[in-house]
Length: 577
Image (cartoon, one colour):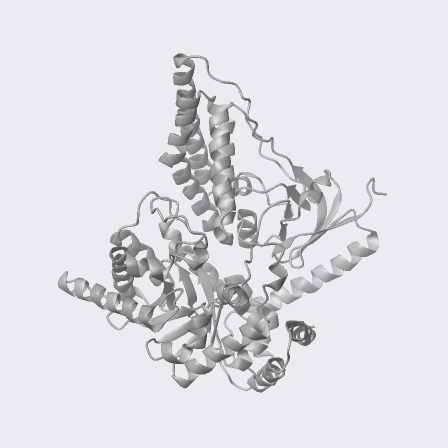
């Protein structure tokens, strides 16, 4: 008999699977500002020294975790911790803390808490989901430095078999330092699809639900919990009938996972012989392992801007060359579409001062910055061209709105080739060039743009946002953000049609490409390449190999005749039932 009544909480499923077990609640002490002011110069000197010592101890602690975890941790985890060492050594954070100690007479504790809170607020205010999730890094390093500053210690938790971890959030170092071989699931109050809890849960194949809200923290140790990492549901102290139902669902899911894993080396070909390319979106060379593990045909989107972040200056041509070269070498000669730097808007670089704008997402960003700062652009293009000698790299320009931008970008690409020729450096001279279609003007004039490039890649995330005039982060209107809106679908259909008419390859790298509801519709439109998170590839492949192109065309015809997204999603949902 349970001490607490059953509750059901809705969160965001980020790592599929069903976990049934007992809760282990992790509660961290909150950072508190004391309000105490330092009295004299001696206390100021001592506070600065204590802060510097705490930084050294924090770095040493992470290095110890990395050293002990190398045999068992996945590359993603280690890379996260190595990035944290760089963040701890960020001179801006240290300077801001010391400035508060010296000029405002704050204690080292208070100065650190305030600076970390300010940096976290900057990251959390960004629209880009990946960058918002990086606020967890800042919180983690702040907590780590603070722990050493206040000489606190935390014991590594040992878990019983069948443990489901309940936490406000889970830091990358938590997942490495904790013994999680008996952990069957994660549920967090905060977090998103790109938070570290999500990344690590996926890497370890552990079901996870994040963003559950404050209600999650009502769970107590040893409460019975069911966690559905697909639907995002969390049950607290469920009835026995619900437990039995979920045990059956878990068994069915396990069988389905085994079935999908067997498709790794199966081509994504419809029952009537139509081949589709299933590629992945990556952020670095290490992601290639996951692409191969899931049977991906290549990379439809290599986000290069991550190389430019978490540092204090632009990466050199050599740094960029090595970054792209590693991805090329690990690609096994599969195509890798490299998107040129896409910063601005919500992706700000601390060392590149972009003036404040009223509408940054409609402002100075992406290709607009590149065409303005040709010195930065040509450096990146030279690095990609050189790395192209080691694999099938291709170049893609983001946020194109007109033909002039395409021609200007291609002109700079030719200048980059001339510089490399002059420098007698080998490069891929015949590299393929494409553009992202993510602005309505580009989608409408796809017939014009197709004459200038080798391929299109449809970025549905921004295309939906710009077409529907919907800020995805505004909670009052997120229901209007709808990729199945007939207006959005007509733009997508036009891009694919014009690409075919002009004999160029058309792919899609937005979230819609990995949505099972959209698979047959897009296949019926004639989409050739679906690029998504690597983990989503097997499920999309399973849909394609079990249907014909003729069926997909019928689905497309019915959908395009419908007048509302409600009817469209209801129809597509019924097909996938």
